[in-house]
Each structure stands twice: as structure tokens, then as C-alpha cells.
Image: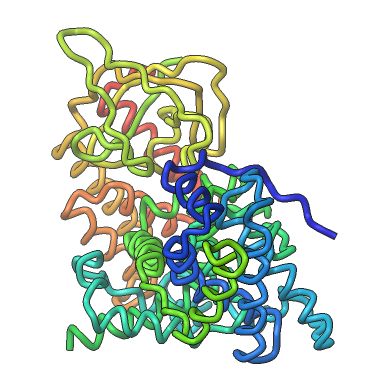
Length: 219
Length: 83
Length: 177
């Protein structure tokens, strides 16, 4: 049973039409580019459904084989990217069911009651300004440039890899792959509210790691 | 939610919804009223945005060479000149 | 409807970042039309009535015309389009400073009245207001003053403080709308 995909939000960029044409014409270079480009993201999403990295890797390979078999029939009603992730999530869901992982996706996001920012960072009843920051975020100087440094990027990768699988999946689809909220909800069978909570937890955790890095750099 | 004010502790939970334009209009107004007087929360939401942006710029890890070889083989078999 | 638009220096919208066209040679600024589907702006242009100003104060204060069905929120109005008519000159720098100092003074007097000795929490809040007033941070000072009023006299006192703030602005700046 396929879920109904939302219509594409943008027209196909010229390069996407060319890529699809090249793939259909058997251009191996084009296929290699496609695999290199999406393999890691596909794996991160798969990992939210299955029990190990190895199984996630298998799911992704099955996905690529399905792409090989199905590219001729790909009608471009959705973008290539959405189509890829749609195949992936279907296969990952099936595999997850076979592994008898019945835990719903949303509850993998991490403790439901865990707030995005630790409560200790806010003032409490009896303090001068209850509910306001006690330990506020320190301003980040020149963040765009500094976050491009090798060290920052390493920290960023580590922080993402340390997230619970479901948070990695949503963060990957929204912030790495740039899919819209409604597309991600359709792919992962998530309500908009749940999707946002998971995304926010993920971003908040990564922000914490980057905050630490900025503090270390300033010391 | 029926409330008079959104404080820092509330706002940090809503930052992504706010950025997504997913908050109810009344809450948008409460958020904006708060951001006017709270440079710390303005900094926080800016950091969330910078984080999302930095995540978007991370390089993707390459698949294992062996995997790529196998997949290219399958692709060539199906679509290539050899077929 | 004639109402107000609060902007950052350079006539920049505080949340949209949009640069508002200024009036020139006696003619109103060009219409700013809501972009449909904008994530944060929603489908409307925003502003406020004089009574709402204390919540939004920033560098620049403009009288503006809001056209089309005008919706009213808690402390703001929204419309499909709006344009700047004339700047409220009394606000810039000196006016903001005077307003902030007036708010801080009231906060201090309220605090002193219930905490005659030094070291109280409310006095500390009022001291914070005084600090903000020195830099002319009008919105923050007004907020603190309202919070002090609330701590001392409850919600009615907080609302009354905001009403006083709006009345000060109307009188001192000669607001017409």
C-alpha cells in the first residue's frame, strides 16, 4: 500500500531533468553521483526503523536496486529525491515490521517529556524573573564563518551521530535534504506536531553541542 | 493555549514551530511580544537557525567502495551497453 | 485605517527584515503588500494602534495607513497592505529616552513604596529598568515597569501601567491616530 505523496513543491530544476534522462540512458556516472549523494541520508532514515546499522545498510542497498529496476517507470510526479526516500521508507517499514519492531516511530524520538532546554537554565518561582533565562545562551560571534571550520564541522557530525535514530531521520530529511514539513510527515507517517517536536529536539541538542564548542573556543 | 505571556522557558520549546510558521496567530503575537523585549531569546532562535543551516551544509559520508561497485554492476547489467 | 508602524533603524521591519519604503516629497511611502505564503509574515502586514505601542517600541515610529479589511489581534492589527505616511519625529532618541526614564521612575517609586529598605526583589527589578532607560531601551523598560506594577498591585495595576504608558506616548508625541 503506497501513501499518497504530496505534490512537488518546486518545479524540477533543469539539472534534475538532465539527471533523470541520463539515468534512463544508462549513464553510470550519473548513477554513481546519485548513490554518492544520497546514500548516507538514506541510511540515517532507514536506521530509525531497523535494529542495526548493518540492517539499515541492507535496506538502503535494496532501495538502490529498486531504483535501478524502477527508473524507467519513474514518472516524475514527485522529485527524484522524494521518490528515493519514499522507496526507502517503504522498505525500511517492511523490514522493521519483519524484525517485529512495533515501537511507533514517534516514541523513538527520545523521552517525550524531555524539554529542548534543561529547566535549570531558567529562573524559578522565588527568583527575580521566573521563567526567564538564568543561564542564557552566549552570543555566537560570526557564526556562519566559524561553523565552517574543520573543528566545528567535526563537532557537528559527532553531535548528529549521537542523536536518537528518529531525531537523526527527521533532522536529515528537513535540514540536510531540505524537504518540507508536510513531505516529511507523509514519508514518516508523522503528525505535523510530532514531526516538529522531533525536529526541534534534534536541533536543540545539536545547538547545545555547538554552544559547547563556541565556549571552548572562547576560553 | 490560553495564556497571557510567553516566557523564555516557553519560547525555547516553540522556536522551531515559530520558524516553520506553524504557530497559531495568537501565539505568534505572544512570541513577538516576547522577542521585542528579550535579546537572549532572539539570540537563541538565531542559534537554532544557524544550527539548522550548518546541518544543511554538512558533507555527506561516501558509501563504501564495495557497495558502490556492486550497485554500479547492477545498474550496468540492467541499463548499460553490455545489456 | 490610520495607525502605527514600529521599525528598526533604516525602516526595517523587526520580524520580517523587510525595508519599508519611506515617504518622499510629501507623498506617502509605497504600499507594502503581504506576500502570500510567507512563513513568518503570514498573509498580512502588521502594525498597531496607539494603545498597543508600549509593547512594540523600537528605533523608529511611523504613522501608517492600513488598507483592506483590518484584523485586530491582542496588541496588533493586520491588513493586506500598508504604507508609511509620516514619521513621528518626537520619538527618535530623545523621546524614547524620556519615555524610558519616565517608566523607570514610576517603577522605582512603586518599588520603594512596598520595599522601603534596600535589597528587595522589586527594587532590583526597578533598578534594572533604570539601567535599560539609560540606553533608551524603551520597550524593555516599559515591560519591566508593567511587571513591577503587576508584582505590587496585581493584573489590574499592570494593565493600568500599560494604559498610562500609551497615554504618555499619545500626549508627549502628539499622536493623531
